[in-house]
Image 1 (cartoon, rainbow over the protein chains, first blue to last red):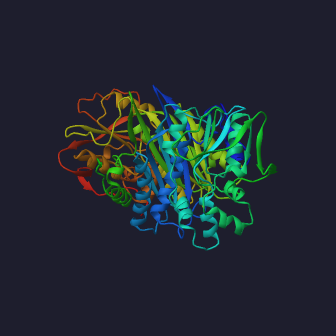
Image 2: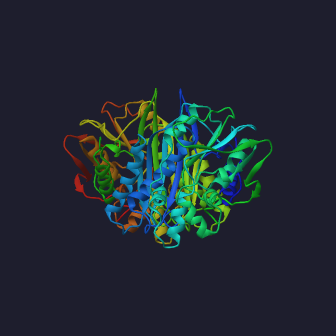
Image 3: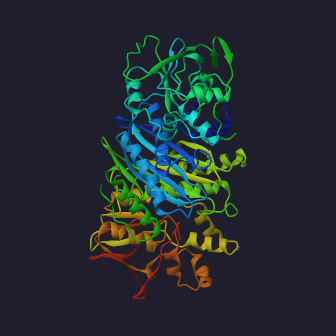
Amino acid sequence: MTETPLGGGGEFDRIRAIAAALGGRARELGNDTALVRLGDTTVALSADVSVEGVHFRREWLSFEEIGWRAAASALSDLAASGAEPIGVLAALTIPAQEPLSTFVALMQGVGAAVDAVGGKVLGGDLSRGAAIALALTVLGTATTPVKRSGAHPGDGVWVTGELGGARAALTAFLAAREPDPGARARFARPEPRIAWGRWLAAHGARAMLDVSDGLAGDAGHLAAASGVALRIELERVPCHPAVRAEALQAGEPAPVFAAKGGEDYELLVVLPSAFPGAVEFPLTRVGEVLPGAGLRLELAGRPVVLAGYEHFA
Amino acid sequence: MTETPLGGGGEFDRIRAIAAALGGRARELGNDTALVRLGDTTVALSADVSVEGVHFRREWLSFEEIGWRAAASALSDLAASGAEPIGVLAALTIPAQEPLSTFVALMQGVGAAVDAVGGKVLGGDLSRGAAIALALTVLGTATTPVKRSGAHPGDGVWVTGELGGARAALTAFLAAREPDPGARARFARPEPRIAWGRWLAAHGARAMLDVSDGLAGDAGHLAAASGVALRIELERVPCHPAVRAEALQAGEPAPVFAAKGGEDYELLVVLPSAFPGAVEFPLTRVGEVLPGAGLRLELAGRPVVLAGYEHFA
């Protein structure tokens, strides 16, 4: 099998162990999105689980938002491979005592997120279970699929949009404060960057992933998959407006707070250095690709060590 | 949207409500398998959830068997549409205290089941959660896809293999008895009937589904989706050898015991009446398609009413 090297973290140790045990029974497991060639088409597929108490709490979000967020998270993997969505299969487990309206609201959220990017709900499965869990598998097609593994020394490292909004909301939720409305929207209804991902794929993106576990962790995976080093200057990281106040409370510099946040579902993309950057969506250069290995995060010229979000911590 | 009519049962009420709420944001939701046309290829996709305490107990099965069984259940949906598997995406939730070996064993079981039918593990997602749950999405291609909806009055109704083995094992497990080894194998390592499904699809199958919820429930869905009535003579149902003893203990006629059992993952298929039946695998005619609606189960010429397995009961 071809194993895509992964950066650090407990989840990635598990993926590595599974890949080793499966041997030839698995294909390349390191990318969020599986790419399968079918005739003239490349099919892109990605699965994503959202579990109550792990990825969300029902006190924070409506059931429609929970459905939207779960679907957006899965669709974001398609965005990062430059794919166009066709639809989603939704496997839901729900406690037996939940009313029918819970199912319907969750699926309305899933349907709205898929509809917003031109896809459909294609099918799924329902089961009871101890907690609400949505396992969503998204299907798309990619004309010029992008992986994590194509970065070369000399390329530039860019991010779309602004980071830290979702973490600003999460920090407020966890402290039982009302989050800033803009930050709450980033957490509750993230927008998968499908159009941006397709544009970047068509305009020379060498490597791409979505920032779902925090810039630090995700940039580390991209560096490992590409066999290069990445240098990111944190002061260049574009921060959501709500970051400043939450970072102050957390006692962290704003770009550090933003870089530690996951689940903004912006794209981290490596582009050739000659890339002009004349794009119609927010795209900010935050660093460069170097020979070597690993991730170097710097703030005002000094190295910084940050952990990515760790689901199994 | 095109909604495939469904038979009775609480899960199907939920699917109906979801389909109504989604409207045009969903495609045909009544089949286990979504069929998507991509260029010259029809892609077949199905999602299936297996939850600890709902679909299995860890006292009964090894983790490898749990993984195999979950994958076989999903692959069985591909078999019923006449599709050839490409691979599976595995979204696993596991309690945080489970060792790495649990993940590996579950995925070895998934990998073995997929490998047995020529597919690969394509990707997935890992999360912690209160119980072990496997949400598996299988991908395949279908040259002559078969749905539930093509049965016509005058056609014959057939089943592959033998029914009731999985229920015989389950009944023993629930009574804390050691199941018959053959029955246990049917429960623990069901074989998705991929080759048989492809052969049937290529030889004129009009409608097909896999018997996962019991013959009674599944035949009712096929009748509803096709807009016909089905008559099944229960004494014709081929029973697994372990059924006799368990049916006696349960105080049920053997074919009734077998017809109530789910999770044998045999195929229920409607074939033209002229179908010769000269096949190289076990295929038994159990009934016929009639004008009208609904399912008529008969035993020795007398009507019988049976419920299918109800996950939300």
